[in-house]
Length: 305
Image (cartoon, rainbow, N blue to C red):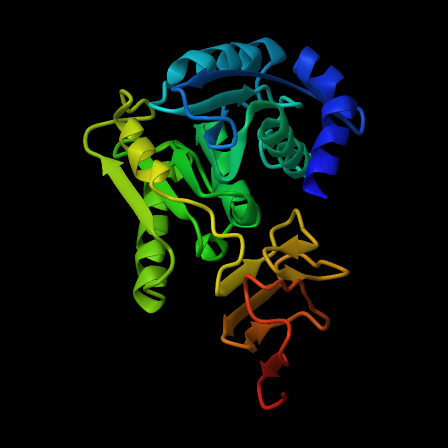
């Protein structure tokens, strides 16, 4: 089935890969990429790197895009830098970004041989804002995420349970209280990991004496992130909807997603336990890598089985 799908996409999506421009709902997202290392086809990692700017004239954001292309190098992987479709302050976490990034990931798997379990997002400044917001709501597509010098706005870290999350901030980066909020997130991640030791792997560093520019000290995140591989079927899921909602997250689904709702569920043997939910109807997408579908599956919620 996958081979047939990939063959179809190679034909249908060739024009957008040749033009290096995605178009969706009247919006366009140009992208640029280069490859480091010589990993075989099917085993390459993908690093989607989001530029800064936002809330500035288009030429300023385009300049930030050009700068992002040169900002980082990798030991191995496809380094891909998209140009945000809009120029607003929230340019990387509007509702059109999620499906565009999902399509980017699909295309890079098919055309460039990316391993779907080795996908990472990184971003600086406004791009870091995007990482703060996208990583929890797209965690099921990612192995790890790296946030550099951004602001989370209203989002929360709960959905990061099953990926690696790197947070890097200059000690003196006080605009919009970035440094203060980063320290709060660092503390929240520590508490989440303390209460759930098998999840919430994180690297949170406040760089002493640095402001908004960290002199590339944040690149220490890259080798740490590269150690993570996505688990498509984690035993435990914490799913918190953002203001941009999804209808599926790992092996959980909802028909009518609602902002800020939360589901916590886990699998142990043949038993699925719903630990917490404010959603009335949930779909489980099961396969034999998770449990044995030749035997009964038990779902437990509160006192009901």
